[in-house]
Length: 126
Image 1 (tube, rainbow, N blue to C red):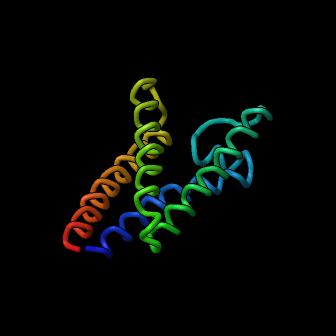
Image 2: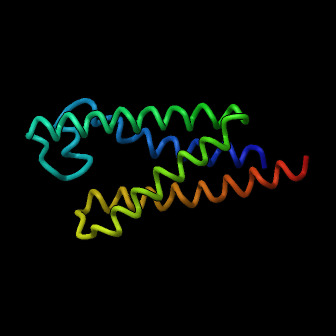
């Protein structure tokens, strides 16, 4: 079961690392989100967002192999995924690329739930 915890954190880490490619420029952001990022301020914000997702993804990956950090990683993962899903649901009318992100975050939340259940199981078994 200990491997299940790590595996779920790795999957969530990969999901969070995928947007990191947006740091490479407006063209990559356009592929990721199906929008134009020609306005410089929006491009700066979205590229910075890509960096932050990269940091979170790296932390999740690190925590997958360092159990003392796993609880914090699960909390951070849940905050990231739930906040995005809530925003997508509350705003609605998103494009196909954002719909892919919604699906990825649904997969991520399932992995986070499985990982937390496995973590609790491992802790209670000693």
